[in-house]
Length: 293
Image (cartoon, rainbow, N blue to C red; front, top):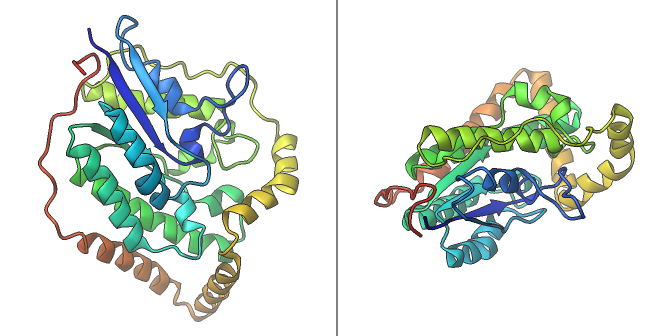
């Protein structure tokens, strides 16, 4: 049997932050999944193009050309949180970049994996006035990802639900990236999607971690030390705007008009999608695990 090529694109989640590999470096859910895509006699070549801090523009301009040159049968694109943490956040631009990225794979017959994501404000436990504007942005990005995943025939994983977010056993000390248990769960859930679609025939990934998870004291220590620095690095140009958004949040809360902000965000996502007026590309059958490459 010929082999299978799998390319992973995205940010720190896919890079593997929170799941250190033995001997140094990172592993992460995509690498775990790669080991379970096909029977042992079928070689799987995996390349991880994801990078910490990447935004949709980075995926489109830097990671996508490298991934297309690799000519994968299967590709994952999980990105968007870092876009919400920038002053330059523009849901129309996010939608256009994701549409172009997804289409590039779909046009080549590459089977695409996507996912929606929880918002970082909730994960960090920010005060409501600061968290809600970020949550609206992430919901808008997720709305776009949902719609474009359907448009381009991707296998989509819902990762923004409360049950996943609330289970602290799944998260690393930074409370923003999965720990080993969380990465294994993601790999298992993607594997289920692929198996149901007939696109994976290897054994499912183990879900139990090999190493103990972080203690509560370790998580609190990270928040008190490195956590502040992480947020500062990821939102260097957002803070003044976020404070203004928080003040606006408080004002609308006092006036009882907070629902207007939600409606405005929903309308922005809808307009971003409607601006992508070109018809969807021709559909191709995704290459299944173990198929000729």
